[in-house]
Image (cartoon, rainbow, N blue to C red; front, side, top):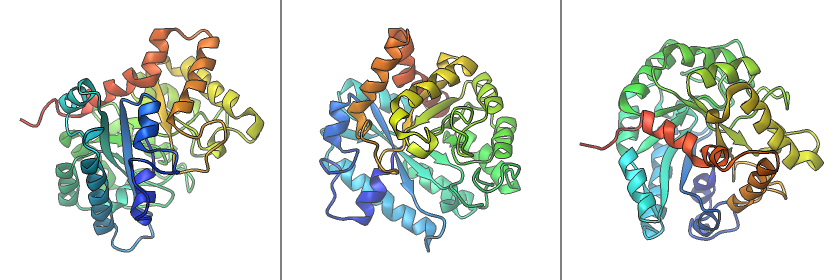
Length: 308
């Protein structure tokens, strides 16, 4: 549900999506048997001309997809996703990390939707016109514009992503959103006490609303002991499942937005997590839910079935 690969390509014209030295390229996605990849357009809060920079980044994304349309295709609807999978291609989902790129303008949100944006992480690590991030103040919530944005995202069919959002902000998304949403790349605070992770209280509430949390591989949000890295990722999953159930969890990775741990360097390495879960007694059905079925449910609940 989350990677920062396009930002790296945007800033380094010599890097290509087909094959590169990053965590994610098309060959690695194929080897990892990835059905769909959400590509985040991450434009830091301090960037001049946020909206235009985001548009420029989207054009790089579209150019890379078009160059490789035998392997990957951008999807706009749920039907597109199923069709692309049947054609044995990777489905590319255009997303945004840092909702401030819309510059508090719903017309710009509409334009981004028309370009294919289907998920938006409301905040990053700075307060913006939408709400307060978790690393600043857990008690700061959504702004009036943020509440308006929630309604508009629900109407258009853009998935709301509350990773990076404060606890109070998440509570308010729960209050105002009529559709299930995601924390695309977050973990359990009880296992690793970092403000970017979710409290047990919120895990329970999100699970009750049929939302999905994508496990984040960023070491700082996993464990303080690098030697326990993979074991701790499994512990996060076990803890979240114990609170919210098996229908609540997926993968968010944060590939290319972090320093890669030697254990999880690219998508194929997710198999290491799967093998450990199987050794813990997870069934084939459980593994399928974690790997793709839970996230597909979110796409189906939010995205239009077709553009007609």
